[in-house]
Image (cartoon, rainbow, N blue to C red):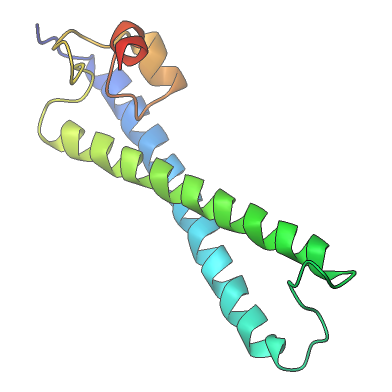
Length: 123
């Protein structure tokens, strides 16, 4: 059951998606830049991620936290890009599981949502 979103609503959601994409791409690029800088400095540093080293445990936790944050950012970025693709194809706002319209309130809260709450609970 297709429904068209009002042009103003669609424009607002398109802007939210682009803002989120920009934010996530910055997180990823900043992390990659920081990682490159850390690798360059690695040779001159005493710090080691070895958990047996006094500082190493804290460094290992920091590295794991960073890795997890970037993985999450990449997954969200994929979801945002998928939503933007659906928007270009005229499928945005339609549940991928049921074909029902996704409520505008859900799209405003999670602009990259591709399922209704009910469908998401089942999957």
